[in-house]
Length: 123
Image (tube, rainbow, N blue to C red; front, top):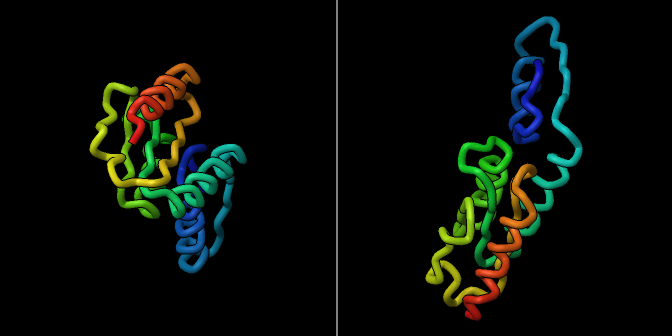
């Protein structure tokens, strides 16, 4: 069993456990990078506390999509945006804590523009 480096860790382990119960021999090569695992855990913890979450990154990025799905499972009001122009003020009305995360390949300048736009909402 070989996993894509950005695969959700829990899903990878479910697949491995499923196979171990059903086949004679299973060889596992865990290629999920430590930074990906740590970021997924951080998003899960932040989303559990946040009223609203914004995940920044490419909508075709496996890493970003995994972060969004993890966020959405802990915080219903989670949004995936590629840049600041996709943010909607209404998402944040009546919210106290907004969490922000980003895919591994999202440039810092895009993340900063999202943060700047959120700060400009002053809700």
